[in-house]
Length: 257
Image 1 (cartoon, one colour):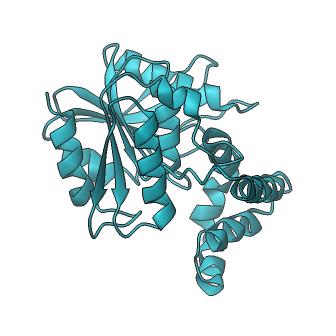
Image 2 (cartoon, helix red, strand yellow):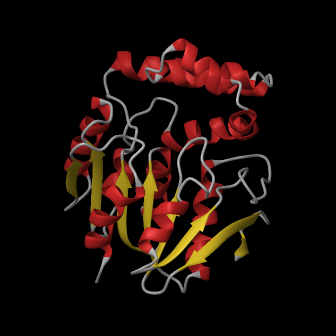
Image 3 (spheres, one colour):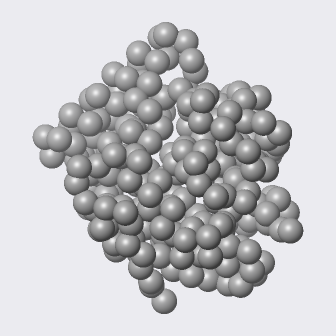
């Protein structure tokens, strides 16, 4: 059954509650609402109370403007409060970046970051990331949703024809206005927020898909060197679109008391 919490700015955040045990909050990435993490929520529900929610602007959650990434941290704070005052947090892709931001300041028991999409720290990489972020944000501001989706997909290595097909999908266009939110969460230069990473004090597991793009594994290794005591695990034969079954096993092993 769908339930709701009210965030600090009055935004209504929708979530499903599954299972029984220590609470864990699932944070989805770009283009995803809670349906994308539904299979993982069900898989983890055998051992945990799983809070599977729609990030603001997606699914059944509201969206109060102006947007700021701090509002999404407040959303997670409201969910943690509803879960009893403390919870573990799992984030995938840009959702991993949001989970990291939240864990740097909220009462998080354990943290799992799956394929956090941080780029390299050199000047060229930072400039390229800022340029792409600027183009996507501008396209969304001008309501050119298909253009924004296609730019993102082709920059991620998807063939033009496939990207064009996905960008025409009405469901993708419906969620596209939240793309700037993910860029704001990750940071427009795409680099690891070292100060926040160093502030992570809870046990942390960083997952990287063995068949994900190489920069995901590079980011996991670099992040693992910054977060105190973090453990990095490569999931061999698993890609960025990892199945719930592939992810649930290492996550359960790490989160179980």
